Length: 241
Ligand SMILES: Nc1ncnc2c1ncn2[C@@H]1O[C@H](COP(=O)(O)OP(=O)(O)OP(=O)(O)O)[C@@H](O)[C@H]1O
Image (cartoon, rainbow, N blue to C red; front, side, top):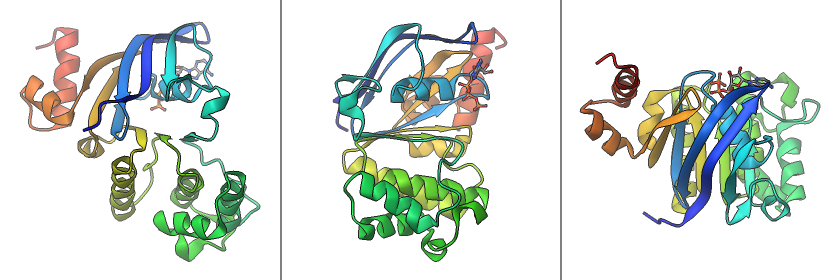
């Protein structure tokens, strides 16, 4: 596995509404890997992701992406972010939405159609985005990010509401992107997706309680599956063992 860090986070502290949300977290994410960001609702996953893409005001610490401070100009065309709420134009068709992003980043309409096919939306390409289901909107949003072929792709819960077949296909796509050298950070609360990641960051109450490979996490906790590993770590922290 390549070990060049694409993302380096050092002693990151973020408050939101005067409340501490990230309490001095540090990690390094290697280029060409898929990292899963897991944690309960409210643990700070979106806040961490926003810090990586440079849309979050941070209190202290540093976030370097591809050797540049997060959110700075040299990263504009190299980092893509897919938010939890699909950010697409409701009054445009799927094809027009993706073609718009493609044009912004110098990609062709053909590449736009390939991205649409890649998320299983080929049959819906001419539909208005406003008339799509939640999962279809998410996939359209993903196609908009994928068409620009970013070096760093940050995805906030991208598979919520998707059926198992599409989820599987998307994970195959994520793996293929990483194999091609892209760096992916994917937040999820679905533990069965965690095994598809090279590395897992387990966030709880604003701190990482694990930063490890799935196999090492299982071995360290003596558990068979990752859900059990996560629970084991939480109980150990709470002294409930
Ligand atoms: N705009 C805001 N102002 C104040 N507090 C906020 C704001 N947005 C989020 N928070 C708080 O920050 C904490 C972390 O939120 P965050 O969205 O990062 O969590 P999350 O792990 O992504 O949760 P979920 O899985 O539910 O999306 C929560 O306690 C939340 O209430």
